[in-house]
Image: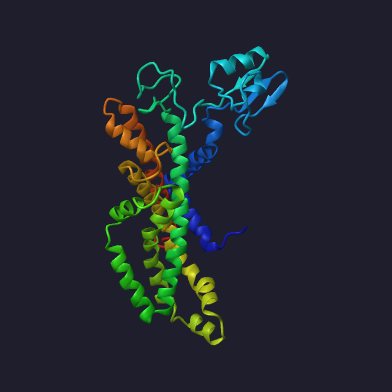
Length: 341
């Protein structure tokens, strides 16, 4: 696909910002790795060779009887009994790089949980005996996917409402602006905490609740662009030719408003990650046991004697937000015609 001359200039301006380019590469690599968290951190082997046959416990659940056990129950591959059965059948177990799921409790710790970093638990364990590295990997993936879902849905709602406000103006614009002033004046974090108390929190509900306020950031820039463009000659001519309002809005005017909108996306993504982390830190987010950077941060606060928890949570969250901010600055500068490369 051939880029237009304008988009080529924008791409060159983005590439000239080395900090943004390296941040984009690092974020993409980390996110790609975390997408396959089950293959990297899992308490189930990804391959088992037993009596000449191959098994893949990550994808298929096998019972103990498959490997010569006595009970028709799901095999616990960390159990020495199952490992001995496989070894007796001239078998071999191939573990992931990190042999712990985010929910796996390590009962063989050298010290009571939270346990300090060891060769088995690279960043130690939390106060429940969970491997910290595994929880960071799964928590990173969950936070970014949550952020993507909230950001894309917020952009859709905000762009649609901003386009309607700016295009029609008049009482439509006035009514929506007064509503946004009232809605935006509410204390967002407190409102989210109150709403979460009325439901059993899960990822889907948290996305819906976060959307109640997340869309407002996109309305202003789109509304301003539509107010500027709605009286231009090409818009008036399109109306005179009988073009429908929706086609005119979203095919001809909206591309002009997407410049500022695209520059906002990384910042909106970082804001969504921060909201999820804040709710989890305060205990109003994901259900207990779910991999969460906010919950790990709360454990670091509660276990001052285990500094690896606080350092890991702060470092992981800080790295995510730093990379997203650098990427956002690069996109913002790329769409700024005053910047050179």
